[in-house]
Length: 67
Image 1 (cartoon, rainbow, N blue to C red):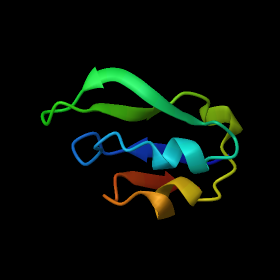
Image 2 (spheres, helix red, strand yellow; image 1 turned 60 degrees about the vertical axis):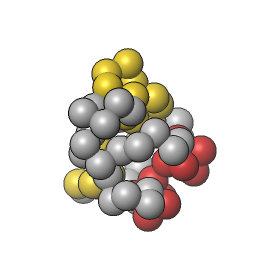
Image 3 (tube, rainbow, N blue to C red; image 1 turned 45 degrees about the vertical axis):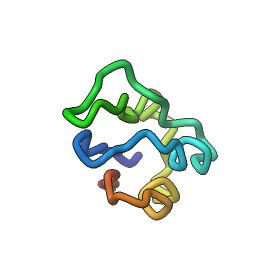
Image 4 (cartoon, one colour; image 1 turned 45 degrees about the horizontal axis):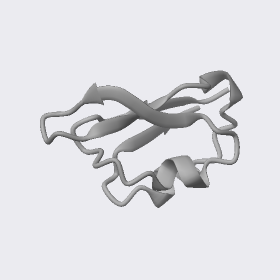
């Protein structure tokens, strides 16, 4: 199992990571960062296989994967 960490201050809520995650691990959260974006949060961490698709597609480098 892998661990997904989202750097909230880098996230701009583009949603690419949510769209490209085949396991539906990520979703928009309810919390807002200092720039006013509702940043993405891992919601089904137990389903993450560590493929890193979300981290590769993120244009802001806001996602870190730990295996």
